[in-house]
Length: 525
Image (cartoon, rainbow, N blue to C red):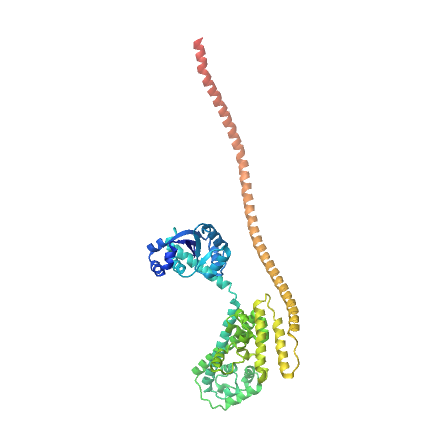
């Protein structure tokens, strides 16, 4: 007969339950489902065999991390070895909810494992009535343990997320694209709004950001004069354009504008200019993040295109897992499936089309260079994802290879072999990595020195406080010693007098005791 035990992992600890009449239960699965809600029937079906409470919240977190990764923790192994009957006539079978941890237990302890079916229903009932099955555990305490462990587990997952640096890049490139759309829309609004007053400015100044700056500077076109020519040149960076703006303002066909309308246009132009300035700062931030997270990919294909590839893949790790054929058409999924549906030509490139290499290649070589570039992008992303010290050496070498391949397509000059290039790159990367490690060690030493100095400064302050306390104690002790010396003669005199009194008392008592005896002797005589 098979004896079924069910393992239940709770935030409070591990619990092992014995299931009665397992064969009948297996045959009558619908009845098991009905009995789960009834506590009395479920108690008759399942009983607690052993319970192992976690000693601390840290122990609970370690155990749940091990279970989520499918690893048998030392606490779980000891608990099962202690409480699960391995020998005997009845063969023990262990039911677990997760097949991954079940496989690990079977490999570690050699147990026969059962998952799904009846075990899932029984675990559902155990989860519902757990606080009543374990003595001394209330529903409130169980919910508190679950809440605390859930927060700790989620906090640890967020803290040790390997893609946390990728997330910054993904959000930055998404915001950069959104800012481009918004700045373009707002600039068109400024052009249309200010164009009623000065329509000729649109043809002279074509750049959106510069147009907004000019609208903010000029204001009322009738107030422009030769004195404002220098300020116009500073904005436009071209004396001819500044002179053209000045001449157009004198013979403009635009309508007059009221001061309140002009104030609103200037305010809106100021907002657009500030947005354009923030976009430049964001682009610089994205460049710095790419140099830290994916320096080789950024050196090969550029910061923006590399960030778009990471964003589309979801993370740098996901991009590193993609084959080169997927990276080549990444971003052109609609065109690919449309081509497969209509049996047409599949796309040759996706997001990597924005790279300068494909634009420089001839029309007949665009497909070939995109395939080669996707291959190099895959290599660069894998180096970035799995290297310990990030360097851009491999990215520069891969970029040189793509340049050589482009010149090979144009002139027929044979490029260098990949093996030779990679050997050079490995040597250079080792040297750069050694330099970076030395710099990091120096920074660490400086940081430790600062900490020691800070500790010494705090220790000196504490030492000064201690010295003051010691001085006070010594002064107090000296005062007490002087007082004792002053009181010592008086106490000595008192002791002498007391001794004399005791002697007199003792002599009087001896005389008093001897007096009756002498009287008796006299009477006898």
